[in-house]
Image (cartoon, rainbow, N blue to C red; front, side, top):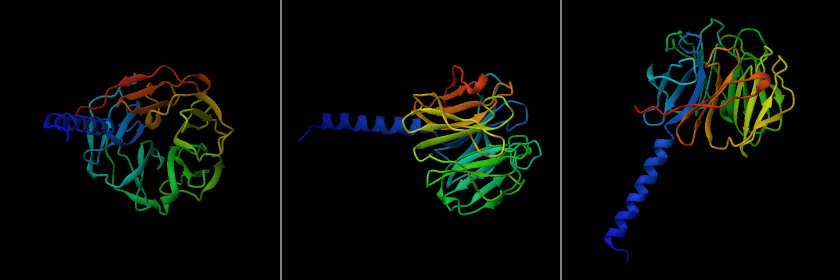
Length: 271
């Protein structure tokens, strides 16, 4: 039998691994958008420790400030998060999918808060990923979602609800994340997808909720746990913001034709 010293060493290693693992996964869900109406993308995360939603204001250069709690309560049971101006009032709203299958819409107040909630859709259990942008150019946030059959579906936003799904793309069974926004600068929302292999694919939008075929633009993204899009530097192009397995927040500035620049890193929040 191992002696007491060996047991203590082994126990210490296990505690260290558990602590490091839990600390690394500080955010359950993440989305990026201009949530305080200052023209700079902010970071919204549901904290793994307390299930509250927090916003970290963007400073316009790719880093994010001290986080503040978004009232009124916990966001327990939410499994997907996407932020866009769904109501068309110029303020970013929050869309969250719950484990009960309901999709909840929280209109934003433009000042780091929300004003009530509604349920625009139910039966959302089959959707494994979602992302939001104005895909059809009507100034209202739309949504795309990946279903269990590996297809990407488009849901046109109607202000407080969404139209029935239409098929937008196929072959998404091995994707692990989807990000939406105008990455090419042509005024049409596109989609980026992270493959299980770590490859990054760009699907350019046609302006009607459908997409052109995929083109690989990067690799090595398998370490990114949470990925979202937002214009953090105010240049009119959508940037990509991701949380890495090492806990850092990586902001990749969007470049011409959908390219991405060198990431700017913000450490995980300490509080």
